[in-house]
Amino acid sequence: MLCIGLEGTAHTLGVGVIDSDGKIYANIRSEYVPKSGGIHPREAAQHHGVVLATKLQEALEKSSLTFKDIELIAFSRGPGLGPCLRVTATAARALALLLDIPLVGVNHCVAHIELGRLVTGFKDPLVVYVSGGNTIVSAYEAGKYRVFGETLDIALGNMLDTFARAAGMPHPGGPKIEKLAKNDSAEFISLPYSVKGMDLSFSGLLTAAVNTLKKGVQLEDLCFSLQEVSFAMLTEVTERALAHTEKPEVLLTGGVAANKRLQEMLQIISHEHDALFGAVSPDLAGDNGVMIGWTGLIQFIQGDILDIESSQILPKWGLSAFEFTRT
Ligand code: AMP
Ligand code: MG
Image 1 (cartoon, rainbow, N blue to C red):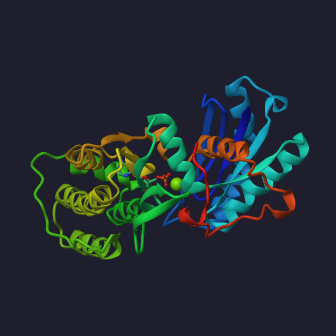
Image 2 (spheres, rainbow, N blue to C red):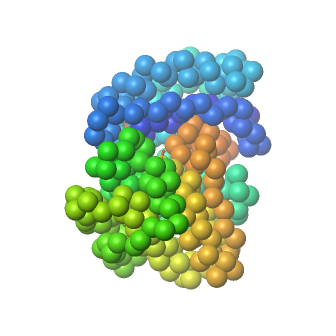
């Protein structure tokens, strides 16, 4: 069965084509990059609306398919920014009606995890999902992905991007910080380490890093220290969740999964707990339509289909609010 997945929760408009065997035909993405500051929801939505038709066409061409071959439409129903979600949901409904095929609404966070399981082959991982909008440590138990730890304020990726912006680096800041942090002679600058129970807080760390920047320290030293402190916080929570759940695998996904230092830290604790470690490659770890298509197919097989009338978006649809039988 062939499915088109439409992703549009935040900055990325994604169109993915995938079949029920997990074969990926196309992964087309277009990212809205704000001229200044953070994401403006209305501008991001406008971007998605403008590029959507062209990206759909591109995805079909890349797949050597036509609309006639498509048997299912899946869209990111939440969580995310309302204006952005509405654009992709409207397109998905129109396509389902026009092609007379079923419509499935997918939880964006579950989709990151399910595609991660597909590409790594992991059966039952502890998941570390770190992106521009989310920082979640989660594992599947009794019909749901349970949240073991999460950020209490801003996401890890957002923290890195905001710091980078303050330091005059263009968006996305994460990869630029990683490059500067690689300096072998970097010196550690003390920054606040904030783990609260199983949860994380990055806003005080961000403020302290920006204030330290103004004191004229070496940017390389600060980038290095910011990574060390924030990644160590995440690693501590992950290790505790791993010790508690005794999962056999640790899966790192989301845009920040591309970071080699974070991969290294998580790999060390995974091995200490006899768990396998895997990171999803950046093209499939960041927001994309393939993950929506793949999870849509799993849900369809379980009979989880939406009527157009009740296919409203769910901007606050948390990861553990979604009951889901894993295959
Ligand atoms: P997503 O929201 O999943 O599309 O991921 C985007 C986020 O990933 C942004 O905050 C980026 O700065 C971050 N990111 C991408 N590559 C890296 C990297 N190499 N190191 C740290 N963060 C990264
Ligand atoms: Mg995401």
